[in-house]
Amino acid sequence: MREIDRLVEEIRHLQFDDIEKMYQKCLQLKEIALEQKDDYILCLASNYIIDYYYSCKSQQETVKLANEMLALNEEKGYPDLLMQAYNLYAIAVCNNDYSLATGFYLKGLKLAEQLNDYIMKAKFNCNLGDVFVNLGQFDLALPYFLESLEQIKKISPKLPEYKIKRFVLCYLIIIYCEKRRLDQAIALMEENKDLFNDTSFDPIDRLWQALKALICYGHGDVAKALEFIDNILGNEIHGFRANEAIYFIHHILLYITFAIKDKERTKCLYLLLKENDFGKTGMRYQIEMLEMKIKYCIVFEEKEQLPKLYEQYYYLMHENQKESIDFCLNSVLYKIELFKAMEEKKDIVKESRLDDLTKIYNRRYFHYKYSEFKNKSRLLGIIIFDLDHFKEVNDQFGHLAGDKVLTGDQILKDFADSLQQDDDRIISCRFGGDEFICICVDCNEQMIISFIEQVYSKFELYGYDKITISSGYYNSFSNCLSKEELINNADYYLYYVKENGKNGYYGFSIE
Image (tube, rainbow, N blue to C red; front, side, top):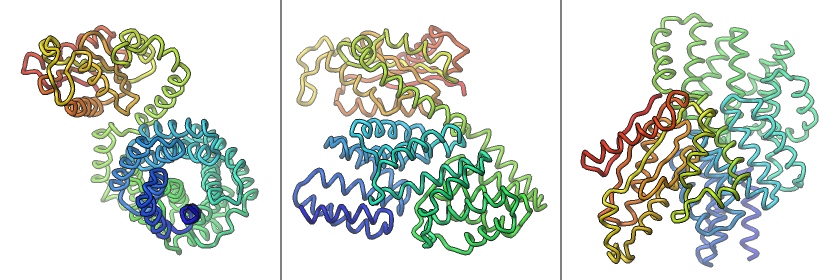
């Protein structure tokens, strides 16, 4: 046991100082866990390995492994490790789906509060703030970072995790600079200057230099600001870990060089962002980089490139609205509101709004929830599912499906389970008999189709070869159609599928 404790302690320290050495220690820990058949240590080692993947591997590899490790932690059920797994999975998917990441951050935060874990409460609040920074919502981000800082005050400075204070402080200073509250930014920097004495030029030191440049520029000292920028440009990134805050600061520094029309430094900063994409791959990153390139061509009079750039910009802004910042922000805010509401009303829902047989929401809850979202969402959609051949099969009690007896009740329970997907934007209810209905809140057509296909795939695993599914959907602006009209339209497409061979889906979405 002493060897395990020693390895865990080494890993905790190396996590912030030497990620490669940390990974090697994790492999040792994992090997010991497998030899001793210790599930807890195996989950612990696996969680730390995810941190390594996030730093050194592609996002695709990271998400794949994070998904596997999340499933392992959910299976074993250790609350402290599951809490960590939620955090790591959310970090892995955050660049592609802010709303999904937010849901897991909230789940983890709830566990952290139950366990009274100051470190994890600090991390979850910091990461929720980071989501809003990514979306350009600094006012919404601020309370999360302030709460994170409050939790950090309860952590001993001797613990390696105390180093997260540097990240939180940097975010707060960024927000104060962005809000032109320079006095608060300077005061925070001076108050915590001992934390930033490291001269190794790690990412945090780079960020610190950039913050100083920003503040100098805000006070009109352009020459001093340029000194800091040159210092940043003159040092390569060592041991780089993808960090949104660093991307953001380099982005801001570009505005300094644009403002003083410094072509050479502007070009260097732009190339730095382009070559080191800082873990950013989404639509916002593409749009921001294109905006900077357009601005570069205008400021430095390289206008021959502008027609092609404007064409690309139009395509990104008008053909790819599925990833719009407003849509992402609304999804995140909805996720937070829904989480709070579900926590507040959990007992009531369990008692009166669950279907007795399937334990998913009932018709009563459908009507209640629809009226709640009617005036709070931009898009509102309905999916109706119907089980094909249900009546015929239900009449054949005693029919064997694999190793279990096929009954109508069991089929309905299994289908209800298939509807339980990890997306709070879609709420599933049993409407009656073998008919199920879903409310889709601020979902585009691709989200709806993806959900339907996941339901079909999950239900197939139960092995009911005589039962198939037909479904119809209709998605519209929330203020355009009544509830009855939405249901009737979805029902129309359902019966279109029924009349054309069943076992499929069809519908319409206004976006």
